[in-house]
Image (tube, rainbow, N blue to C red; front, side, top):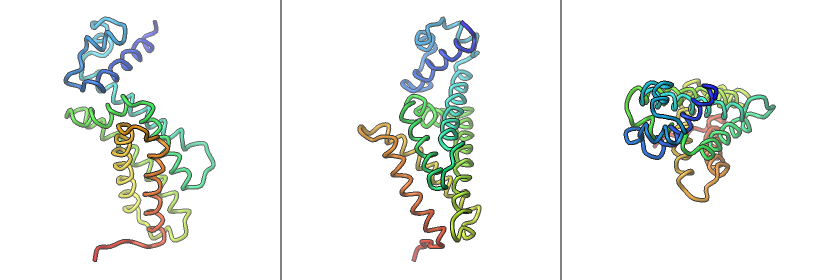
Length: 205
């Protein structure tokens, strides 16, 4: 069997084990068994449990980012529908790959370094991408000049943080679909962005 195929099997098994048991509790014996290989072969390919977990985080993060980009790129859509397409792709990926989402959203962030840095890098890449979508919408809207780059960056960070929390809630709540979760956040975000583009800012009294 080609090395790439064998390694993919190992990573698939590791993602499943890390998601279900957590980094500390997951065992290399179980991962090897799920992958259908010997434990020495897992170490030969991926060196250590730490490097295996890091490889899982990187692979799943790349897959999530690719899914979001694929949902948006190559399609002639107005700005609001491009943002919607990105959100829908995000929630769909989280729903269809629940183990992957647990590894990225929970396990990677709670086990210290170097895992937290990998998770932060993924989050920042998504935030930059979303900022581009928001900025594009603002540039094409009437009065968009009233929104600063700082506004755009802040909105992107808020949107990504909300999406992460909502995706976890949706996956853990029976009957909530990816489309429903995406629509909830889209309505919340687009209403606020629309007000900003019309220079209608809320401020405390």
